[in-house]
Length: 167
Image 1 (tube, rainbow, N blue to C red):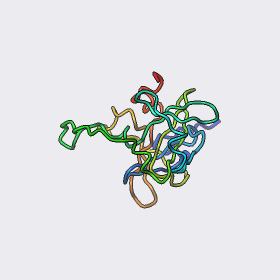
Image 2 (cartoon, rainbow, N blue to C red):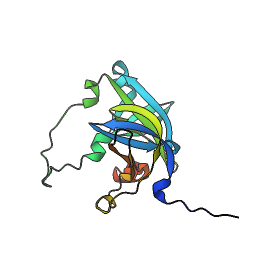
Image 3 (cartoon, one colour):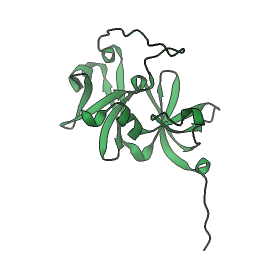
């Protein structure tokens, strides 16, 4: 028998590319349950707010929702100073449509609101640098065909960061 041990840098996984703001991210397809697009006319009836948490009614189940841009925003400016919190109305109602990736972290399902669903592709996983090792939101990175880097989202880490299991 022959044993071949492949380093993490050679792991190739199918994934979904998506965007939040101007950045691209990747979700492993093994964690992807389904994609949901909600038209502007249905946003107020399909997405509800319970306390401070957003949820979507999907096939008679309530799934917690997180906006990817909120997860990635640490509430601080580039110098580490806290940003002034502004009270804002439901920003989802200003959108033409809402794109949601329903994902599974272990046995727990939740929805991630993204700006745009791009494409599915097979990516090569690269380990994170030392400066990003402590960040729970990222599991690795990949280099896209255009040379840009896309971070691979750690869906279990995001669930923990946003305390979704407590909802």
